[in-house]
Amino acid sequence: EERRLLTAIAERLGKILERHQVQEQLNQHREELARVSRLSTMGEMASSLAHELNQPLAAVANYVRGCQRRLTSGAWNQDDLVQALAEAGNQAERAGQILGALRDFVAKREPRRVPADINKIAETAVDLATTEARVRGIAVRFAPAQGLPLVLADAVQIEQVVLNIVRNALEAMSKTCSNGGEVVVGTAAGKPGEVEIAISDSGPGLPADATEKVFDTFYTTKPEGMGIGLSISRSIIEAHRGRLWVTSNDDRGATFRFTLQTCHGDHGHAV
Ligand code: ADP
Image 1 (cartoon, rainbow, N blue to C red):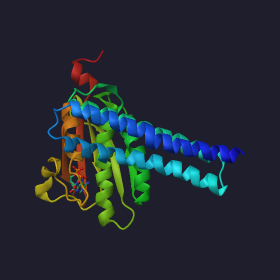
Image 2 (image 1 turned 180 degrees about the horizontal axis):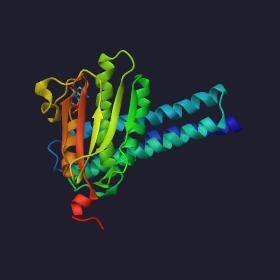
Image 3 (image 1 turned 30 degrees about the horizontal axis):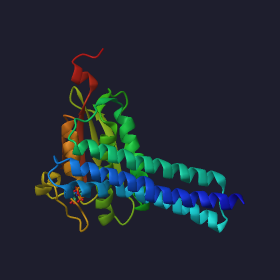
Image 4 (image 1 turned 180 degrees about the vertical axis):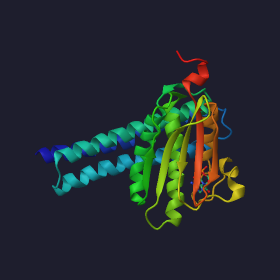
């Protein structure tokens, strides 16, 4: 009896998420897109939306299907199901946050920069990338510096930047490394008034003439690529008055770095 109830709930949840919530958000977003004409092309925005939303939506579908499968087979325990449904909820919320961040980006509104802990932001992005990394057999290591000052940041936007760079790294490494390898996300004190975030991989790296090109809109070397992830990332960082660039590692792979301003740097003297 309990099982049947839970199956029904999982089924309903799946449908609600798929049809109602997500669909409605997409519709809302489409309406907004129609109104906003600042971004160069609608296609550009639509592509970026698809790119960024794909991950959390696929995760929601997976969790819900997983629940359904376990309930149907009869082999389930309550903790697992509660955990999976909670995760589905988190990912659905994540999709909503991304839409919000993209909406702000389309509107070219100044990012809402508030004092934030860069290590928390970076760790959230690392957590979000963990599942995809595990599937690819690659580790994502978080290497935070301690005692960093607060930065001025729109946390969700910066999470998106880190996540996008980490995902690129995972994709690049999947092509060359049959197994193993790691992506390191580190934070460090940069120049005075700045902190620096570095994401380095041990993939194939970049040709010397590509270190600027990769930030061009529509530059991609992937068959299914959109070539907008890094150009959006750079816009976001520049709107934060930071810099984003990439260098080749001495041994192999590439390191993407960006800076953010500290609260101190922005306001003159700390209180
Ligand atoms: P997309 O991922 O859709 O191609 P991006 O703007 O995110 O768009 O990336 C542009 C290009 O930059 C990629 O197609 C790839 O050629 C290159 N690139 C990005 N990150 C890396 C990396 N970590 N290692 C090697 N090449 C990379």
